Length: 209
Image (cartoon, rainbow, N blue to C red; front, top):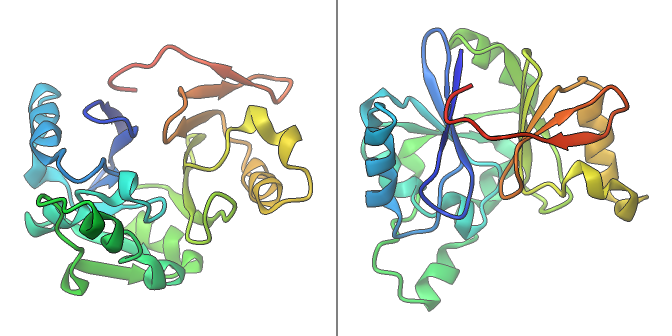
């Protein structure tokens, strides 16, 4: 399995290549599609090689070009609990008259439940599971891979956990930490490794891991 960070917007997005198929985790703001395609080319990747797009939550800086990407073939892998939120950012792009924005079509969805996520990921050659992690938003999910990689979108960084005692953020982190992750991929913060004392340590980011 290969993890490639794509650097084309202010949102960290990741290409996860499994043994059979590939997932793109998150996207950037509407208007970054051309930059996304250039970045893929610079990393010697192709849009046609992406099978699924997984969105951590449907805020505009994480789903902005999901509709454009899905038009090119990848399915939007969505948890059933996220369904009420897939168009929550449409009004934001409408108010700013963003001519680049394309709403996600229901025809481009692959809907599963979190309790079925491990079986589905296994079927496409990726060992891991998708976890419901509310806190930043009610539709937030995280992706855990059995090699210790954890993708959390905009869930508040682990080093801020003391600031969120008794909140959904703490509950979500406690749920994630039971998996004993070794490396955390954030939506905006630097990638971090978990040291022996369970405190995150920022790492130098590589294009491929």
